[in-house]
Length: 335
Image (cartoon, rainbow, N blue to C red; front, side, top):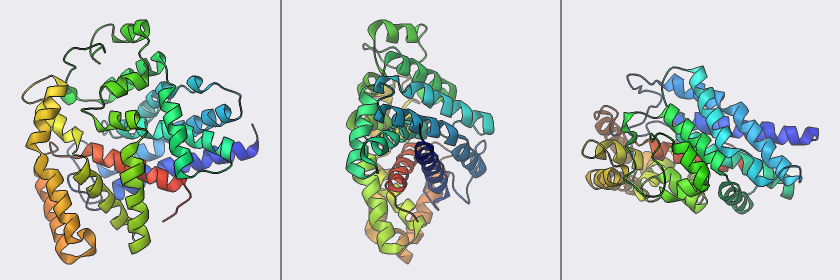
């Protein structure tokens, strides 16, 4: 590989690190850890540490994508699951603040590989080509990728994970789950597609990152162009995603208090937390951080969600905001 290929991989790494760091710096992103709010066991600094720690793995993902683009590697050999697992473990090595970057790792890894592949085949990175390659990277995963992703999710998740209520796919906590994945040759894409109806990160895999490419990325681009303010762009993207795609992380936390079966739990949680998406939409219609009235409403919304003691943390919306930011940066935009 040539020096320019390593330079591209370096840039992809920086895009990933910046996207994760800029996302958590958004203030106030209602219900999340941000510049002025920490959770009891997870601080703002933990997210910054994780944002930096995942960089080297994203560089490796980009190099794998470049190798595919140069014809030196088959696409199914990228090792997306192993890279997700490595990113999650690297984050855990560099702070003690719990699960901060699992969702981001599941989004950033195929994005990084696709970015390397796109640049190697097209000489540049732009939205449509990047998304096409993301779809290829995701659909061409393997059963080993699924097994590695299971390890990553188990290592990062809490007791609020819930369990699958039957079906063809093994539950994460089921003994012999990885053996079943191998025997039935369920790929990581298969697993994500099967859970897309109740998990928005999985939905991104099944849809070629529809939320990030069609909602988040255009919102960041438009709001920053109009305001010149990266904080407003990040917070408004977060609110826009949350208003259009109710947060499944919150829904799971609320729902598992009534049933351990994850699909049922998320349905229950989505009904009970519909007011959160409605509030985000109402705030945006007030002008959000562009107006005094909207700014007051954002802060009040943050206080209300923070009062839930972490139960009302829109973590999936934050991950999707970070994914949208990474696309924005990969496509050459700068704040």
